[in-house]
Image (cartoon, rainbow, N blue to C red):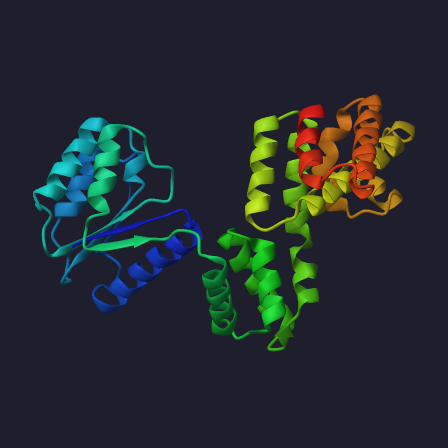
Length: 319
């Protein structure tokens, strides 16, 4: 039996793989002696085929998990694997899970193996959920962990996390533990999600500051796809540059100050200053020019002379 698990939502695919392994152990192999997990990207060819064809030890079946074989660059190995699957040479007594959570190779042989795996009887494609399905999934997870959440908070939770299921999972754990059976509110989500939002905005501001235009434009596009408005993005980047300018100004007069001291002086949280610390090495004239440019753009947006979308794109080009 061959099972293929793949897709861009790596949290849900990892969760499904874990469930498959646990179910196998529960039903057929409590000792776990017949579960073999192999690195299909780097493991030797003979080792992989040896594990696939080995007989079970004091159990009915073996379970072999081969991770990221579609990222392997050994074309000879991939051709052999494709032929073995096509000819159905794997022992019926063994179950083989092909698990892919890395980028699939671009060459012809890899694509052919990929297409073949997608034609198997048991295929789980874990792509990002639609907004509706994501809310259903998140609500189910909250309830399963003993929590409660209303519709407004649920919508805010999903909008905050977007397609980042790893963050969504972590945030649900924190919120359920924090509320201790009480209903999760919108305010609770803001409390726990703040640092993640800061991380995203800082990463975007950093890309803009270092002139990484393609990276910055890609990140802006991702935020737009997650439903974040252009005006909010621009406002948050402006806020980051205001913090940077204040911190740089203080450091010029206090060159030995630590991130904690700077944070206290300009009334910011230490983790924010630590994240922008590398940018503070730039010359102060750069900060003055960048901040002046952004405040001018902010004025044009608020005065109706331009729109946030155009100003965001122009900002990436100008800085």
